[in-house]
Every structure is written in C-alpha cells, then in structure tokens.
Image (cartoon, rainbow, N blue to C red; front, side, top):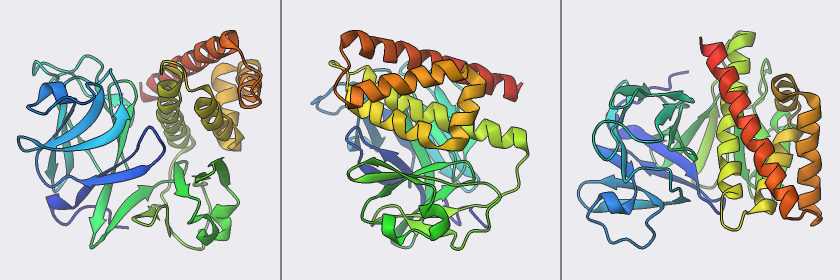
Length: 306
C-alpha cells in the first residue's frame, strides 16, 4: 500500500483535544508548534498549544500543556515526510523534547515523520501524521494500534474490528487493530471527516511489542495530563485507563513490564474512582502508579531500541 504523499502539501496532523474531540489540520507549509507567548498572538490562555503558519495565522489545538515551549518545534512538509526540528524558544532545543514514535530528536536536530507516525511535543501533547486525499483526511493505522472511533461510526465497523472495540465514553470507542488478521475491510470512518486506513505489515514479535509499548506510553500521556490538572480529572483518567486495560494484548504486556500485582492495583484504583469511592489519597496513589508505569515502559522501549 502506497502511503507516501504525492506532494508535500498532502500531510495532515491529527490529534484529540482535552475534551475528546478528534481534529486535523493540513501542514501545507512551514508550521511551528508552540504556545501563544512565543508569537505575536494575543494571549487568551498561555498554556494552549497552537500551530502557527506564517506570522499570526494560528490554530488552537484544544490541548493545554505547560510542558510545551513557547516555540517548541517546527514542521516542514517534504516528499519524504514531515521534517521535524526540535528548536525550542532559544533555537538550541526544547526543554521537554520532541519525539517521533517515542524516540527523542536530539535538541536542535531534525528527523522525518511519515504517515502513521506520532509526533510528541513536551510531556503530553501528541499528534499523528495523516494524509489528505481529496476532501478526506486519512489516518494510517498499523497492527497493534489503538484508534478512537466516534460512536456514530461504530455500527459501521467491519465485524472483525467490532469485536475488538471497547467503549471509552458516551461518544467514543477504542478500536484495537489486531495482528495477523485477514481484514474483511481495510478502511473505516473514525469520524465524519477522518477515515482510517489499515496498513497490514509483517513485523517480528520484538517490533510488535515495541509498537504496543509506544502506543501505551502515548495513551498514558493523555491520562497523566488529566491527573495533573488542578483539580485532577480522576473520572476521565480512570475511564481511559480502564479501557486500555481491557485490551488483552496490552494488559499481557503490561503484566510483563510492571508485574501483575501493580497492574491489578491500578485496575482496583480505577474501579474505586469510577464508582465514586476514591478520596484524595486514592487519586494520589493512582498518580504515583501511573507515573511508575510510564517510567517502566519508557525504560523497556529504550532497552528494545538499544
């Protein structure tokens, strides 16, 4: 399957806002990722992550992330993919880093992100690289990926993917893209504007495990963002974690990384939060457990990469 752009102007960033809305933005020219204070843009919310093309032409992402630098990184569309440069406000690299598929770009250096890859800026903000085809945005998904699907689209999923779907909240589902499956259909709508195209590919067990770990850490960043709000958004975080742990392949790998007892403890804490029985001490414990899990997965990814 050809997933390369036919022109540099075909690339799109796809992301999910703090409120769970899935959005996309074409990257047709050099684009900055940062916060309003780094540009000549009136500051409504100094921690809102924005995409800036030109001097003042900006897009609000709906993500509030204080770990993103005012001028964090710059994107340049090319035929090979999106060139991502970790600049930081000083030009010497950002404080909290820019990552492609959870591998950090050296400060002040550049790397190429292709369709299906993820770009993380700071600790929590994640974008996925997609393509624009005519009037539709195409999100590439590989075996091992999790894809969010609008509840209006869930009944239209092919049967083999409907079986792997898990309700995330009243408006969204998580769909796990399984490995070694002969798909009845390799594309489906995740929203009315975004179509998912599955890219079946052969992977070794090691590559597959690494991809799942990368997906988990990206997903956990969203959970950590909820837990680090003031006050913490415990219900939202617990709902996302609970859904993640329902994906059998993910849960089995998490057992290996952190141990069954710790993962079961996180599950119990999520259950208490969702039933309204968790106090401040349980929320703090959940924050500690999730942070420990994220660190353990990060170390595992580094070990597999080394």
